[in-house]
Length: 396
Image 1: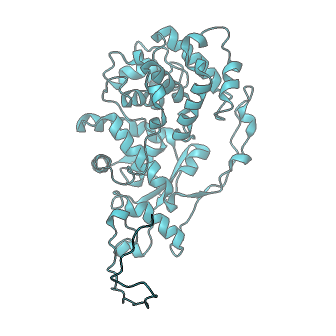
Image 2 (image 1 turned 120 degrees about the horizontal axis):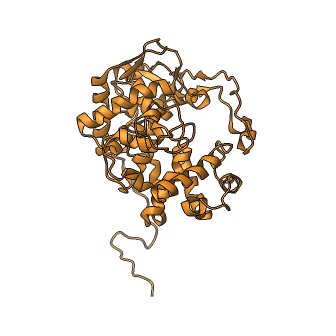
Image 3 (image 1 turned 30 degrees about the vertical axis):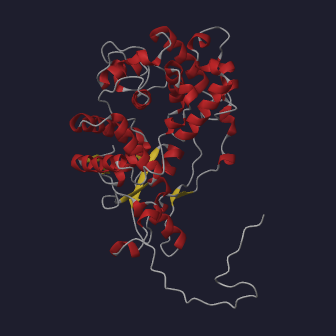
């Protein structure tokens, strides 16, 4: 069984540093933004429509998908098929799994063998139990347990499925997706904030393991299941929110944007051996598809070549600018997680020039222009009629 060691003071210090950088708009918070900011004003203008689009988006926030891409595609779906976000219509006989499948497929080729069923069933439950309004789910909610009681699917493997008075919840929604829905609605000021964990996904965990706030006791180079790590991290983050008085939205942004805006592009977090999109099983995008065992791949860490100027430059644009560079000791690559749901890490390295001296890279505002030598003035011969004292008159 996996043994995870926790250094809570280190997690607290890391999160404090990230939040300070977020508030000061430092790197990487000056080059990236949360995915929900891609929701346009035409959707935000109607709070109920906005809440319904965010509720629909949560069906795709289940790992192994880029969040910003999912939201941009969700906006396109809403513009083309707004009825897919209408709980009343989706509760009629006309709305079938095939109807939903045919309208989602052109926009999001992701787990289409199951999401149309989840989408249809959950919008029906939303209409039946909450009058078709996701905001009503959170009426009177002031703590995480009550949120999980209402949102987490009663038939899931979550530990909350057996809590007293458990409601039916939503199919496919466990703790992370429940927190994701709360995060989206809080960020959009559609519900009041309350102390709850951020949606602990791979990106949150990457920050914790990279800085050794969490350590896998079995040692370097060992895979770890996401679910195992998340079960440890969720109560830690909730404790942090309560003790430090953080906004869950602000802490969520600080952790997620750090990983997406900086760690993602670090050369030490690159992997080799993953399938390209055209090599993947396209049969998954059929309603009748049955999930199969994943193809065994030999995914490996890429080893940065610190003699290669390209790797050095990428390092200086990411780790070299990062406020965590004095605390970060591990590479945690997303490739392993996206292929098989595991988290894998190794010791982080740096170019030798960066171990003892200043970085080569400086942000534009930090660069100092070197003094320019005064150039010798060369006098050109004057052409006839062009004397220094001569003043040219404008043409009529």
